Image (cartoon, rainbow, N blue to C red; front, top):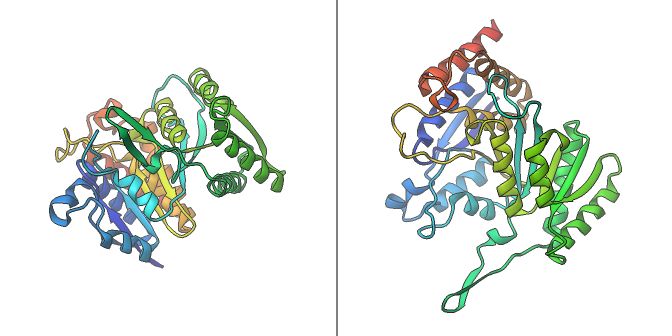
Amino acid sequence: MAYELVLLEGDGIGPEVSDATVAVLAASGVTIDWLRMPAGAGAVPTHGTPLPDATLRAIERCRVALKGPSTTPVGGGFTSVNVAIRQALDLYVSLRPVRSIPGVRTRHDGVDLVIFRENTEGLYKGMEHEPVPGVVETLRIISADACRRICRWAGDWARAEGRHRLTLVHKATIMKQSDGLFIKSFREVGDEDPFLRRDDALVDDVVRELVLDPTGFDCLVMENLYGDVLSDLCAGLVGGLGVVPGANIGDRYAVFEAVHGSAPDIAGQGLANPTALIQSAVLLLRHIGERTAAARVERALLSVLAAGEVRTRDLGGSADTAAFRDAVIAALAQEAA
């Protein structure tokens, strides 16, 4: 079976890690026809926007996209392409699995967490205004429908993947109504599914415990801002944003992305590490039902990292992007032989 999927290469090192990932997927035996569409800062000069309408229409038609890192200006300029895509396509689930990687030394071993972040509400609605000079108000939107659907999706995913516990992260001691609504919705959904252990914890307690011993948690579900911060913190537990996958999923569409930055300082030099986007592509393969190929790509990638002979500079090695890509492809071929 051949798939037509959208490829958003992104900015900076995006084209390099995208090309490496496309090559690895081709070696997996899955036939994918990539529809390359513009998005990010690179699209602005030609299209006048970082997210052209044609790009959204392409994702709607193909249903699934793979996305490289994109640049977001700080304190001005255009809004985040990532946020715009999530809101336009109602990709309400940010899925961020975080696992220790063989051969990548970190402070903690045996980390195996999953972050579920509500992707469409909270402060990331971007509803800000300045009622009087020098005073800015930002609205934090939390709805029962959005709370219930992310909690239900997280619970369904956790049970399907054989996980045993789902923890809601909140700050209901202070934001009693908004986070209180999240807790109420979480418990209502839990009453419908008694076969998964569910509990809740304050966000500050969770942050402290994650730093001390992240193995005490299994799956964590939370609102938008908490999810943004905690998913990056958890990435730091296993080696950084350059080695963890990310997915944005809704009821109809899904975009799988590298969650690290576009690293313009090394763009075009062949130094980028494609691990994060390859990991995200593994999630993509599972999403479209190619679970055997997903497992093969994951094993090949992890075997290269565990061996430690071919590593990019961010992981302490000297290999360039092409050499790392070729090592993963060789590992795939060796397994198939």
